[in-house]
Length: 204
Ligand code: TZP
Ligand code: MG
Image (cartoon, rainbow, N blue to C red):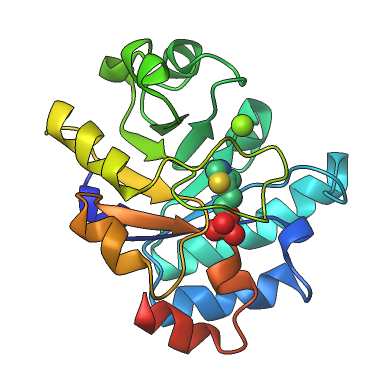
């Protein structure tokens, strides 16, 4: 995977949006995000056909703007929507199983601790999501923040693997995450809650 695609990695599901997710992604795509992850998850998220129908609309926006479309956790949905990639966490389906099923899709894996890093099947994944870097109100079950120092540590150990910081990153703290050695920032609320998405993406 080309690391520059992770630079401004926008993640979102309908549960993160106070207005139409289609409008939010359209604005973010036009403003210059470099990748998108459809993460329809948690309380208030859509299920079944509604999830698929929203996914189709978001997928189309990514096609039209040449932005990689990545699905969180849901392998069936990734298949149905012809996603470019899949992102899995520690409690989701194993990355090796994902690779066996999808030889050509990008695979991202979240890690929060050294143990998780050591136990990860790094040879089958395309990038790591590292965090939460800062406290976040978006993911209710987020682990303890690891800080930007941890990005530097992971970067030292893994010079070859693209990595993106996630969790509580704002337009002002994104710089620290990049300077610690990340290839990009993965953000939800810094974009979904922005009063001016164009401006927020520019600042990022
Ligand atoms: N994984 C770790 S923190 C997080 C996820 C999905 C939430 C990130 O959201 P925000 O609003 O950018 O803090
Ligand atoms: Mg997960």
